[in-house]
Image 1 (cartoon, rainbow, N blue to C red):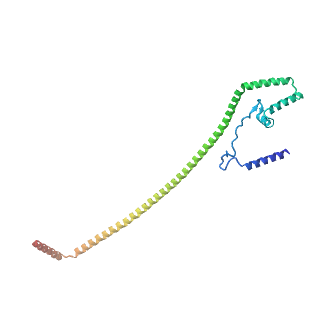
Image 2: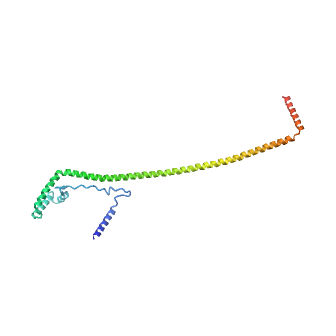
Image 3: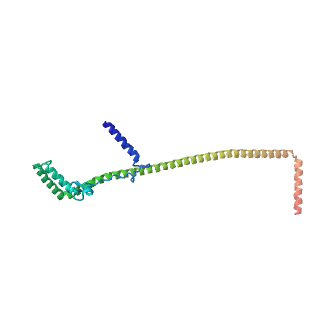
Length: 242
């Protein structure tokens, strides 16, 4: 039976949580407006050292200001007159102890209260400091993660630059080999041209020598003498004209 009650209570709580929604939005940030952070509660106001103020407010709307006091006095009178509460020696010990405690509270209560408030504030500050440190650590981790992402992007740029450098090196090697092939072909063509020029020069020289040799061999001594005389006559005629 108790297990069924517990199960139903858990279902109701889960349904209520789903109906209210989550305390965080899609980005993971807490919704401070609809789900404010819990604040440390302060003790309520009391009268006579231990009676809550709400009790007096409850009686005030029905009996006025003196109602709570008259109710307490009447209840005490009723308990004592009917001997429901017997005044024996422990009663007087309790009264004396109550007077001592009341005097102690009046005398040292403010100092003790201030000291306890300071201790509570110190504990709360430690808790808040722990939360602030955690948030700061997470923010630093997020900053480091963003810096790591930025560095990773820089590595991608570096890889692109290296790829571009490799492509430039390949292009330079291709152009170097192309120039080497061009120079080799030009050198071979120049060799063939120079070879053809030399062969033509040698052939021309041989032909001239052959013609001169044949012509020289075909001239007789008489023809040579006639030619020499004719040349001398021509020179003499030219000298006379001068």
